[in-house]
Amino acid sequence: MGGKLKIGEIARQTGLSISTVSRVLAGKSNTSDRAKRQVMACARSQGILSDMSAGRLLLNSITVFAPSRAFDVRTDVFYYKVLQGISQALEPHEVRLRYCGLEEFDNDVTLFLEKMTDPSTEAAMIVGIDDPHIHALAADIDKPCILINCRDRSMKLPGVSPDHQLIGEFSAHYLFGQGHKDILSLLCLRRYTMELRLDGIRSAFQQHNQRFDEEHHLLTTQGFGAAESEEALTHWLEQHPTPERPSVILAGGDYMAVGAVNALQKAGLRVPHDISVMSMDGFNLAAIHDIPLTSVHVPRDELGEEAVRLLQQRLMRPDMLPGNLLLHGKLVVRDSVRRLGARKTSLPEKSFGLYD
Image 1 (tube, helix red, strand yellow):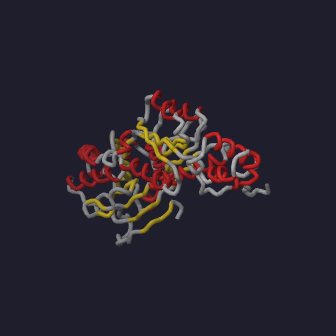
Image 2 (tube, helix red, strand yellow; image 1 turned 60 degrees about the vertical axis):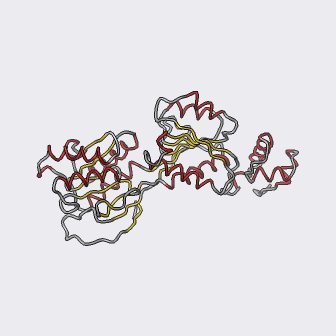
Image 3 (cartoon, rainbow, N blue to C red; image 1 turned 45 degrees about the vertical axis):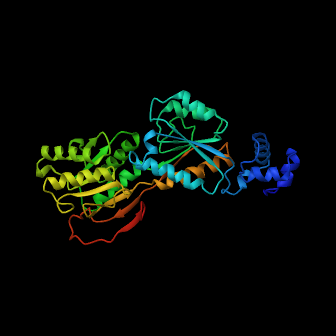
């Protein structure tokens, strides 16, 4: 077939009408499952799907599994925006989205299987769920499934995620480049993704020939909230006299940065003159107490779009070896980080890629 899409030839081989073949290959919903299977099998056998436009999404319904908090912007703005990104990426397609709440671990397996085996679920996306049993079940069910901000350690499911380790490493590198050696990381290590950021920070310390001492360089919290971060840093400052204090705090999120700034100001310290603050988040709060916040934007809105693209690839090439797509962050320089060893100048807001 010369690599060209010949609808008439597929119609002849399958015994279906040209209009039915056309509807299937256009991803229309008004076709039977039997017709879809026939057309797709014929198209694959002729090597057509590998050359088709990536703009086609040859299914009608996707079920999205995510933690319950993801469905409320007030409890988890990050995942809420990820779900919005999926919805927006699917707007050009005739695809119905269904949602199911699952937690990160120890999930309702019966509910998951019920939703996954439902004929209306033609494909699935699993957002932020670390349960290996859920991943194993999803891999065993013969339906396309994409992971978002989580990974299948058995290497059976493809996924897309921020490159958390590189984001942590890059953030610390930037601070070292600004003359900071005494960096206190304020992190919530609730998920392995935050552990990856910490691994990146440790790597940056090693590359700059600096010893990473958890007592002086790491402060952890149970959550990402401002109040908890403020309380933790306030206590830490009380336990560490001025000579032991950091020159900069690297916070694991914008709300954690809010807590850090609050604690510093209540201790009579100025940001960034006395202690600088930087965030690895950068979406929720551009300014804190009139202090423009330097941050590395963790990719969030792009996750849904890239997940849809991965799903398209899986539909076109179901035998493609699965892998993980890691997205870089973006540095936004504002005024909350002071450069040491040089006269401070007022910097305009700029955006940089990780390798700029």
